[in-house]
Image (cartoon, rainbow, N blue to C red; front, top):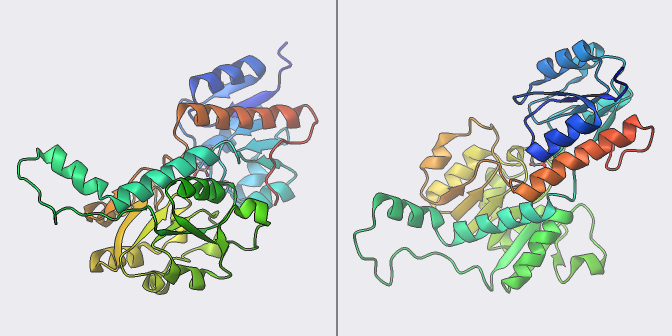
Length: 322
Ligand code: DGY
């Protein structure tokens, strides 16, 4: 008889993660990224005790009565958990976990890739080369902005925000930040605290968002916020698309109020607003901040560590506070 815990891996995962899941658990491995209804059905059918979940498993309070009584833990291999109703799941008696820390460096790298790409007009350059560069460009042509010496504003100075600040120091940038609370000086590492978003916006040449999504901050970058940014500033978002009113962003990019934007996240994914892709002054990536071999393995392994801990009666390593 198989007495290993029953675990549903409700999304495609890297091979090393799938192999470990199959070795350690009585695992049901999905060959696609399940949605919430599919995950609930599979959990019931197999008497599942732990789910390795994903962003398509948008679990709401309405799904909870259909989950089997055997289920103890939902492990998200992502930092963000705004795709599900964590409060309702925890009130239902489930442990919900996420994967902070392991994707900090990769997300900061991608934020910097977007900062450099937006400042240095990478999408124009790539388009010219793809189309077959034939005409010479002179001294006043194709000019971008030099990031070094400029002021970077970071909204949300958690681990990822601080990792971006660390990279900015290597580029001789001045770093300002806004956060709910001011950090202790050792964590600030020379970055200057600004008490409100309104006060931060007009002071930065480049603005980068690093705060979680969720109702409180929905649409915080709206028309008024973009208008407060400096003329010719650069906007970067690797956090959540819900933080931005995209209509207002498109207007600010079209009018030239913003020099450029670099985006990894969108209000609708994957069916993002194609008007963004038509703009010459944006550099876009498809929500891939954590997409390196090392980080995706680490995210999956941490989710399995959390499942193993909870099913063995130990505390979760990285629970989400409801
Ligand atoms: C996260 O971990 O929250 C990333 O955005 C990937 O979903």
